[in-house]
Image (cartoon, rainbow, N blue to C red; front, side, top):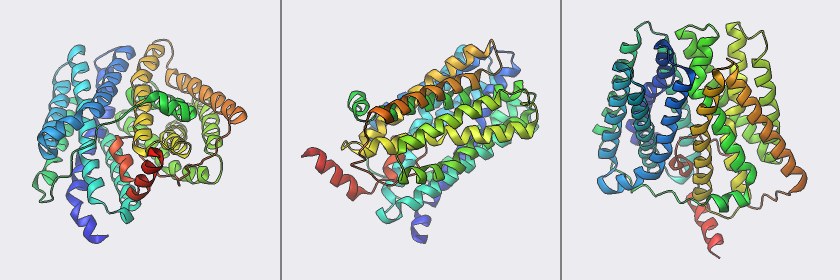
Length: 414
């Protein structure tokens, strides 16, 4: 294990530095939009453009990597992300922000892909679970630290420069590594119809989960700001939400190994609805109450993607990668539309995020309970829950035992 960690140390270090800058921009961009006096609908559209770029990146970057190689693509994408962040920091034109965020989403999808394909190829079968956990902790910690950097009293322009500097510095470890580049990234193979036919709860749940989380990432800082939180507190508001998702994902996953995963998803949706209703109480004006509420909110939103992925794989003989790509795309599409709906409603009420989330959780709860009552899930292809973060389809493969995947593909072929 020690020699393996040394061989991927440069990759993990690059990920940590890059994602600190990435985490900073998640919170900084909406806050800067508020400081410019922009409407919530404008900020929501800018947030949506990031996720649209992310979807496009997942579909197109593999071909680019196959053509020019991992390290060149990685360097170009980091440069593109850095330039986009700097343009946002020095300009206040809506059209430029939309283009910059679209490019940033496209580039970040590619950056995740390159890092995760590298991680996948360098990790032997017996260490996949451990390495995936280490990678998840590093990405979570880096993004949380990045959001907390908003609290530094540097002004918006200098904070954008700090984020850009972290992105650029993230090139150095991978750029100087002597490890050989991995094989080309496989293209995503999608058939929404086939995946939806075998797991409707997973696809609906993934979309609604993305709908909620996309609204949070795009408008969360605006919600925090509207509740009187200062810049440093806004970063903490975002960080505790993400930490809630990390804290509850593994316990919920293990629970779903022992009982019908649909029951866990339904329960998560019901408690998510309760959390949203609590967040709308008049008591929602004390920082600690806000933080505790958002910790619960994150704990009920962010595990939904991994639970839906596990449930989908339990009930189909399609390949893990095909199912994972379909669930990921549904989640990403939800993230595109969520900010648009939340920001439109935000013009009428500051509780828009929680109203939209409550409606989404309600729909998921009703749909899941309906499916439980009328359709049997045999879990014929059951496999233990794997705590997978929502990045790209490459991270799904890190958690796959190649031998098990080969057996599954052989069974499907026959």
